Image 1 (cartoon, rainbow, N blue to C red):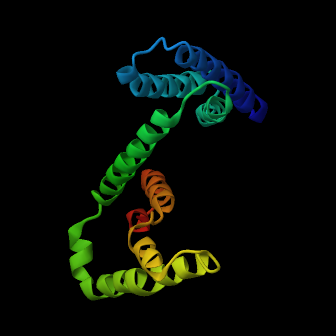
Image 2: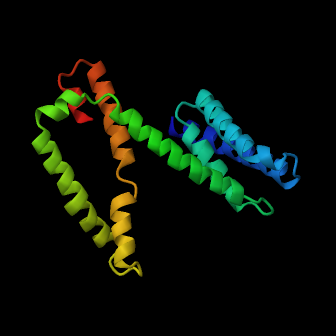
Length: 180
């Protein structure tokens, strides 16, 4: 099974990267369509790969990105800027989607505990983790303070816990929603 996942992913990712590289090198796309076309090719590659080999889409788009970034004569600066904008947008939307099913009644019932935990995370745990992670770096105290307030904070853990909660809830496990 693993061979199929990696085989399909590598072949489709490489084919998509080389095909897209030809289009970009030869300037076959107008500048205003480059980012949208790259996004469409990424989504198409991901979908086709998953259709041919279950769960191989991530391998395909990873191979595609690695190859495209390392091929000679392919300008990826605009694409990287677009990717950064998409990352910020999608991460923000994901936080909203993950928080949407949390009932406010649960927060109101024990608001003091929730506020205490949130205060500890924001004012103690997060600054200490940023301080530990940046020891020996040239960052100033002001830069570390900014990082402790705005750097990404566990979107992967939040997404995975929400996924597990949905799956556990589907099996009928009582209290599964509390995982979120």
